[in-house]
Length: 80
Image (cartoon, rainbow, N blue to C red; front, side, top):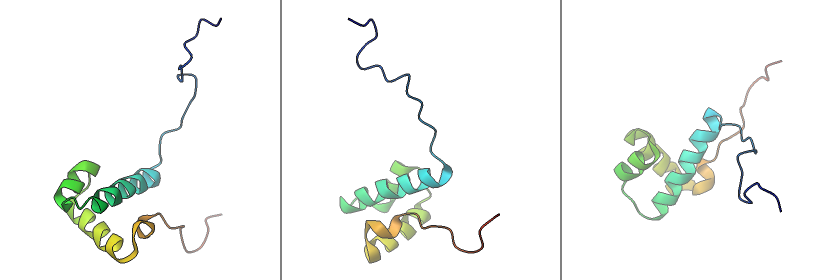
């Protein structure tokens, strides 16, 4: 038998989230909380964002659901 614990995950390196990924993750968590009918002030505290940002996200969510909060590809000229 191996002397390593079977649940050891320390050898797996996971890169940190980029700023854009982190923001999208926050918006997806906010959407979950909107679905639970949580107040915007509570959602803002839970995701660590300004209440005005959360109110904006909620308006988008009410109009287009969770997909409206997903990150969109950059537009315009590509850097080269």
